[in-house]
Image 1: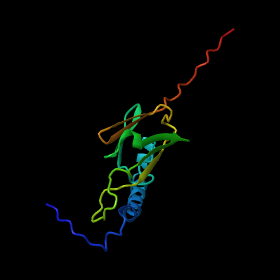
Image 2: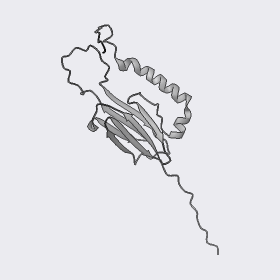
Image 3: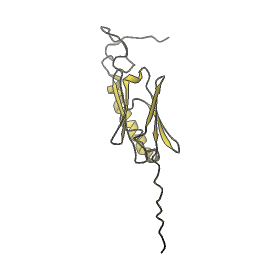
Length: 157
């Protein structure tokens, strides 16, 4: 059993404000330490904020992004590609009806979020497929088919 103790001194600290700088610093350390991830996957998985948490997978024909976004419905989410940037965004402001309540402890994040990924030249931003089920967003980004060398048959006279 968890005991909830009300302490007004710490209720003023916003979780997002406190953790975001640490998340960004961690993301920069990982991206600097493992530059091959960006080169081989074609996505900068550590760019931007750390919410939603994601996994990035690579297959021969595509790259997959799986994001954990509990508590939202499809209508609260947006997946867009603009100028080679994949953006996952959503709004978690109206999940709970807690009007006139005094906050004793806040661990659940209620805010808007936006996470962006730069698609490399090897990924096709036009044919992306996304599915959202049970709080899991799955995005499939097909790879661009490499151009086959063209052969020009020369007629011999």
